[in-house]
Length: 207
Image (tube, rainbow, N blue to C red; front, side, top):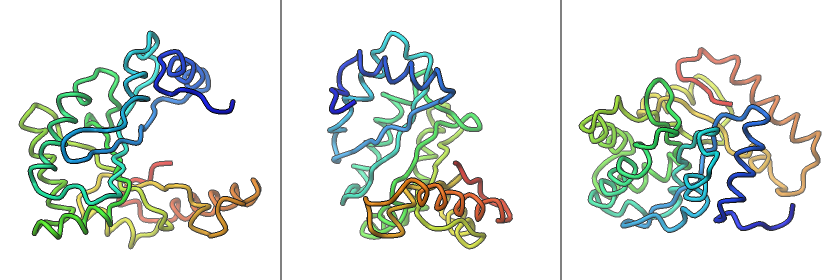
């Protein structure tokens, strides 16, 4: 298709229609927080303004590969923003009755949290407490990782407070990105999915 203006409603409507037609249930939008506001929500806002928005749910993938949160105030403000602007949308994607939020880098979250005398686990627990105060059951946090699924990986993310884990572009983890042929990509994903099927299943793996 070439370049297109994802901030335009008509583009969002076309994307929603295509996704709906082929059985896709939701989009996870990359979402950024600069400490006070979200600087890049144009595609998501176009989705919410679309006439056919009810055909496709959405959730957030917090692109946390930055120094934010730099303090607890910034973190709390972000969670409040989620509650007031997104979790209250009827088309927000829920898993087990909880709004789903994907965390791009659990490692980065933990590193930032340690600078605050916290841990990634304690920040997730803090967020869960805040949303429960507003009547939600909690947040369904999903850890995003390029690690091959295993019992050890599942134990790690379960202890950190995640409800599930999933992958992010596994081909890049093998090097030589972005030059990979399609067959190699398919083989890589099949390898990952086979590994996920052989764990004890203590933490759900989302495909």
